[in-house]
Length: 381
Image: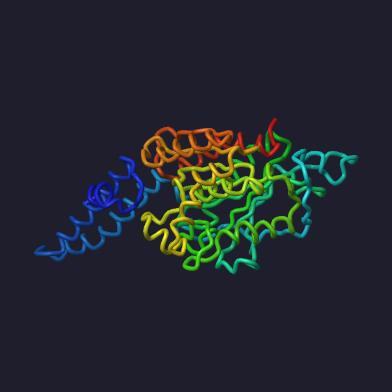
């Protein structure tokens, strides 16, 4: 059964690790055994069989989750966002040019600010004023230095979940805030403002971060509505080098698309398990529903074509990562890395040891790839 669904039909679109494959097989086997005991058996065996089914399913789920690293607790599994509304009363929107963040402190002549030990994470509603995209609530991280009385202008890092998924996933499963806090601890409280906006419009939707009649204006939402909200509510840089995009799977594909197509807006991309370009798994379906039937528009939206069209890039950094056990996406990462190098982009390639298409890979790529993005943002040592 597992072989049929993964190797033959490729239902999940990704390779499963041996651990996940084993737990899936055990789950199917246990449920099948329980169902078999419902027939031509004594009543007490039927009762045990009925009780066993949810036990087998729960055990398999826990084993797979331990390998995949997606859910920390029941709230994560149920999609409950564990964050309160973010209080922005002390913030003021201001766009500041340049990447010398420490020079933008509002009161540089005063005493050094008391910097909190950790940043703050909270939910915000970013209106889809221009796009009308049905976006869910975003989740935003403010680094410790942003919580001081006179916060400096800071770089911005978009963080995009995979699909299916939700904005909070990059924090709950991806540990973005933990990574940023660790960086800030050794850099005087400085880290980028992280904005996890909703590029999907629902857990089961895949708008591919483009504008389309069938899926809505996902690109306009991220590039116009979200960007305008950030610039209006937070002290941020106007320099493209100070804006980057991080993502996982579908979100990683979006990250590469945006940094490749719009170097005037983004100076970096950090991609964990990216596709080669926007896709619904089938080229014909992708073109028909995502690009209004235009193959030319579809081809133009591929990062390889975007890199070729915008080459040579003046100042762009891209880091491509994948899991060691994920042959498909590792091949994609190598191809994107080679395309980026040819286009004059400073590119890096990462491989997460012993992981596959999962959140363990995401956390590895974020931890080991972010320093290059931080340096591009002007947040190096």
